[in-house]
Image (cartoon, rainbow, N blue to C red; front, side, top):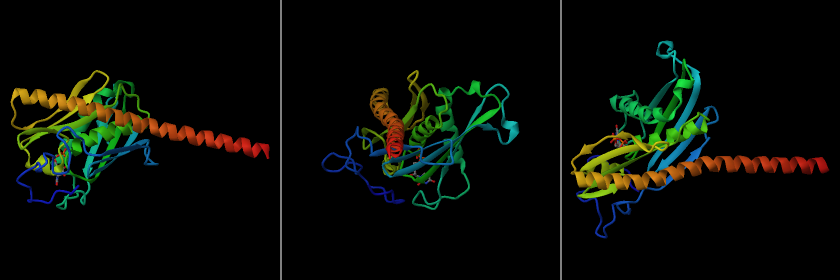
Length: 261
Ligand code: UDP
């Protein structure tokens, strides 16, 4: 899949065969790969490849709050730091965190907070560091999804996972999971997230134009895709424990063999 080239957006976002420019159908997600437990020094971590997006999330906590004045005596706090690497986009991104990064950090924190039991951790903080290594549209949704996985990997008690997806409109058609070029050249973009324990929407942003029927179509498509993403998150978590179990069994078998010698 080609990355976005600045100012070279195509006039049409569908090919002659009715597929999107990257070959997808309207309801098709980009290829997604998730892995947990990949950063040794973090309490929990996850890595996500979502189309051309490449994102790491690392979690620390519960731990002492720095600076101290942010601590709350009756509950823990969740701090999210979304950062885009300078080399993650076509233009050089300024290294200092900009307004967009602060906004997305806040959005991701708002999406995740409802699933945490922060009242059980007074005076402490959970910190989630999200590093965008390569960006190609939908990074706020991908970041929310990978951050939820990293929190689960850290063993932080959670009511459920959180999954996120962007749906939108390109060339008059409703599509799921906008790529960078579709995000920029399309007519509408609606990122949303769901907290699975109560099936409530914890993020709903909107940029563009649509009518009520289209809104219903958006939500149907988002619901279907969110279920697919949730299943991938569960599979990624399970796969770590299956690997650990296999390693443990192998070690035990080797110990038995050594003992028999
Ligand atoms: N983008 C970029 N430069 C920037 C910020 C964003 O090229 O400084 C690209 C990047 O690929 C990003 C896309 O524009 O994924 C859409 O950005 P938006 O702010 O809509 O957020 P996102 O869709 O990533 O959640």
